[in-house]
Amino acid sequence: MEQSFLAYLRGRTRQLPQVAVGIGDDAAVIDWPGSAASDQPQLRQVACTDQILDGVDFRSEDQSLCDIGFKAMAINLSDIAAMGATPSSALVTLALPAENATEIAGEVYEGILEAAQKYQVAIAGGDLSTYDGPLSISITILGWTEKPWLRTGAEEGDALFVTGALGGSLLGRHLRPEPRVELAAKLKDKVNVHAAIDVSDGFSLDLDRMLAASRMGAELELETLPISEAAHQFAEKSGRTPLEHAWSDGEDFELIFCVASEEAAIIESTDWGVPVTRVGKVVGRTGLWKRVATSKFERVFPQGFVHGETDVAATN
Image 1 (cartoon, one colour):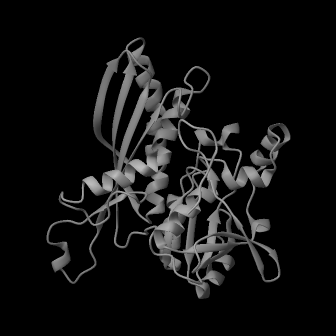
Image 2: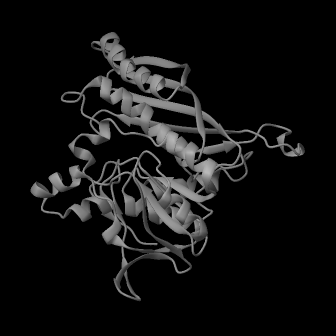
């Protein structure tokens, strides 16, 4: 539903004033009036927003409200990192159940403030309301960058990388994700990232989205895909393999990005403080392809998590 509605919305807003980068990327990019006239590098505003809802994205009856508040900040920070931007401030809106509203707000805010302190983000304002419904947390984060990373910049021959380890987030990692804000800043200093996206709905599904936006595909070395220990643990009771969990589990909040092939060695020879793994290359034919022999590839299809639904398969 989300992707089809976004397509509808892009069409319906086409006659409205436009921003530099709008609907369809990890965050919006907003140029300041008059900035294009200057010949000096300009900081560009980056903005993203995300909402999480009790019973859909978390379960307040058996999960810490502090962890839930932390997650609400972290998922937005992951989008900022995927744009190669530096976060600066946040606007926080809480819709609170009428019963125990003050207590709930305080616990949620402890997690929000913990994330804000860790990633040096100002709480610039927001809104509080109470109603007869479940807890809802909506956070907008503002950041800045000179040159945003977009989903549309992948080029044929680029080397594909993913950060961290994938899969098994439902065992608890999804409540305390580590948005790769610091890593993104380090990458910008060392290499020219052509395209990037964060892994929120599943590695393969988000990779496919980035490549579709670039009108490209990928040849993947699936044996190199970094699999988390949680994915191995989850596989023991799920009936699926650890690789299947790494391929399709949502809410890893890692980064997928690509660079020119000649810069791949810089990535692989640098200690980034977190694992960064080469998983394939960008190719001109659309779709995802896995190596099955020395020079033979087989089509594979993306899978991932869609909010409100079970695992789904998608094709280009």
